[in-house]
Image (tube, rainbow, N blue to C red; front, top):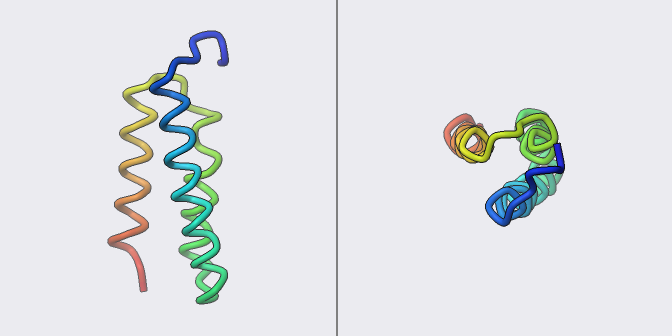
Length: 71
C-alpha cells in the first residue's frame, strides 16, 4: 500500500482528510449524523484505495455527496 507513495497521493490524503475533518466538526456542531458519517468516510477511504485516479474520483464523489445530500 505504501510502496508506491507519490506526491499526488499524499496531496489527496491531506486535502480530503482536511475536508472530512472540517465536515465532521460542522456535522457535530449542527448534530447531523449524515454529515458526520460522510466526513468519516472522507477521512478513512484513502487507506483502502491504492490507485491515484480512483483516490481522486472517490474523494470528489464523497465531497459532492457531502455538498448535495445535506439537510
